[in-house]
Amino acid sequence: MLRTLIYILAIYSWIAVVVLIVFLGRIAYFYERTSGQRTGYLLLVIPALLLIAGAGYYLVRKGEFAGEPIADLLLCGGGVLLSILGYRLHAYMTGERS
Image (cartoon, rainbow, N blue to C red; front, side, top):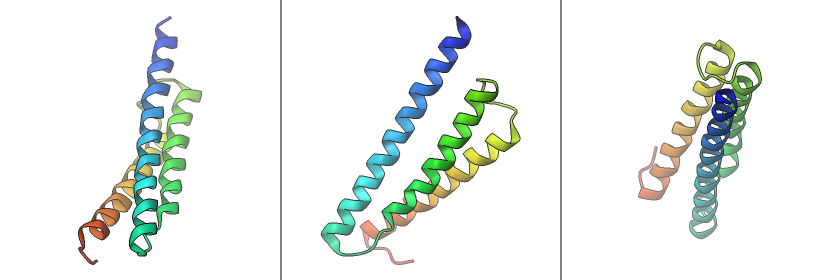
């Protein structure tokens, strides 16, 4: 019973993360279409896949989100790449040039 609840909560939280990434992608797409400036919104697929792979690895292996180095690297890589792309989009939208 407890393990089932852990899986349900993990899946629910990762669905929320994917929805937020899709929302960020739609913002980047809209900005690219309206401003004519390339945002590279399709690059958001890479961190999404890394995060999904890391979460999936945990769900298949143990169900608990601790102690798996491969999954930790996938999650870390996805998070760092998502942060970089989010900051890059922020810089484009606020007029900062990098």
